[in-house]
Structures are given as C-alpha cells and as structure tokens.
Image (cartoon, rainbow, N blue to C red):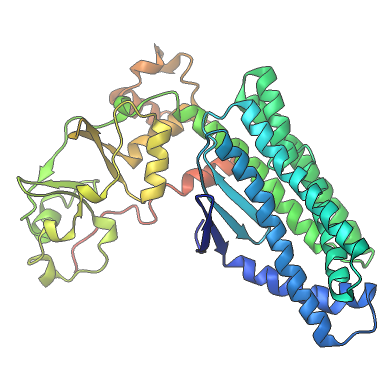
Length: 422
C-alpha cells in the first residue's frame, strides 16, 4: 500500500503505518476527550480528558494490530506467507498471500481475528470491573466496548469482513467453485454495506450524526465488488501461461545507439519499450519514463545510459501463469518483462499483450468456441492474427465498473511514445 512507513517487525512480519492513520488518531483522540469521556466520566480537567483520549486511541489501534496479527499468525502456522500488516484509516489489513488457499485455512484465519477481539474485550472488561484507578477504569471501559463491537462487526457474514471470509470458505468447500463462493459472500457484504448507508441516512435526519456509517458502508460496498472482480481476474489469468502470449522473437538494439537515432528510426512505430543488448550489457528502455530531454542531449546520450539493467528486473518463466505475470507488472511498474529459462533469456512479455488477452478472455468466454468471421476458433487457437480480427469486431458486452478500475491501473498514463524535443 502506498503512503506507508515501516515502524517495526515482529514474528517476521513488517508492521506498517499508513499516513491516513494519523488523521484518524487525531480525530479519535479529539472525539474521546471532548465527548465520550466527559459524558461517561464527568468532573475532570480538560488535560486529563486529552490524556485519556490519546492513550485510549493508541490502545485501540494496538487492539486492531493484535486482531490482524492473530490472522497472520494462524496463516504462518499453516505455511502461508505473510508479508506485512498495515494500519490505516479503517483499521488494519494483513498482506497475506491468498493464492491456492485451502478453505479450511481461510476459515481458521478468518475466525481468529474476531475470537481474539472477543478475548481482548473480556480482558478489558475484567480490568474495568476490578481496577480502582479512575484513569484506567475509563480507558478500559471504552476498549471493552470497542473490541466487542470490532468482534461482532467482523462476524457479519459479508465479504470482505472476517465473517464473509469464513462464509466464503464454507461455500468454497461445498461448491468447489471459488468464484461462486466469492460472489455469494460479496453479495452479503454489499447488502450489509447498504444497510449501513441507510442507517447512516436515517441517523442524519434524526440529528444524531451518521456520516461515519455512510462512509463505512460506501467503502465496504466498493471493496466487496472489487474483491469479487479480483477473483474473476485471477481465475481468468490462471487459465493460460506466459508461454502462450510471450514474444519469442524480439529485436535487440545496440546499447551504443543514441536516443536521437532511436527516435528517428522508430518515430512511426507504436512501440515505446525496447530491449537493449550487446556482449557486455542488456537492459530495458521505456521511453515513457525518460522525462524531458533536449534535442542536443538526445544526440549525445546512449541507450545504455538510459536503460534499466536486466539484472535489476524481476523475470518470469514460460510455465508461469498469466496471473503471475500480471502481478509482476503491477509490482515493478514495467511494460516489458523478460522471460528466463535456466538463466537464459528466451523472450519477453509486454503488458499491452497481456491486457489485450485478458480483455478478450473477459469479453468472450474462451473456454468455449469463439466465433470470428463466421468461423469457430478454439481457445488455444486464439493467436495474434485471430486476436486482431476479434479486436475489430464490435461487441455490446461491457466489463464491470470495478473490474474496469482494476484494469485501468495497468494502462499507461501516457500511451503515446516519447517524441523528440521540438
């Protein structure tokens, strides 16, 4: 997640803080010190209330961290990779590798969070009842309530909440179909999101606030849709390999060629990403990332000086799924990725080729026969020539908005190739 800062590492997991956390921390501290604590525990100074608000807000986020950590530790116990935990505006999120996860693993991970939150609620309740110190009595009273709410809220059977993930695991085990299970669980998440929005609207009319319910409901509704479309994306891209769509014949430019010569020679070409190689150097040159270079500099600077060395690029393999390549493009921000076998370069995969194949697969069910100019074409025969014909064929079928948003993140911000300075 962008805008995060690593604060420490525990159990091999990076704990990160998103910049939005600070906004919530300040708002929550202000709300507790000016409203909650003065209402339930009147008669104390403003400074005391501010101290209580700050400590309570901090301990609430510690509770959220422990909630996410419980998910992560269960995942690690089941040999599932956990990269990080990020605290942000709406709480926390664990960076868990969910690929090929068994239903039993997802179920155990999902329920671990709410169970731990219930345990924390019980601990804070006991401290609240047994502790005689006013300061900690007030704080533990608040933390008992919030951890109980956190547990019950997450148990709602709507994806992407923990209860929704548990429901998806059960449905996946029953139907043996992850897409169907996710669609049903995500529908539950959307219904709950609509309920929150409606409740927030009624609260606004009653003069008791409600903007947070509307905001949270809208966020959950959006995430539920995106979560389902991501499963569709993964399922679709996992059906074909890098070998099917890679370029096995490729052009290698001389690293000593100047940028001016490159632009002059390929001015009318659509390509803006090139492979640069000689006996001592190999790299990838992306014209879109060069920025402003004057005409004089274009005649002096070589491709070797501008290209990213191949050693610094994470490669993929022919047998990898297209989904693995999709993630690699997203993580590295590249438009061309080398394909290696036994430390030997065997080809390249371009982002636009992958995206074109993905859109084809989404618009046309490539598990079935595809009609092109009156002919049926099997999935494994949809090669470059056929794809060009299909691309020209108009269709009224459109992609879901949330999926379009995901795909848009992989499109070029500037689709036009770099032009010489004029």
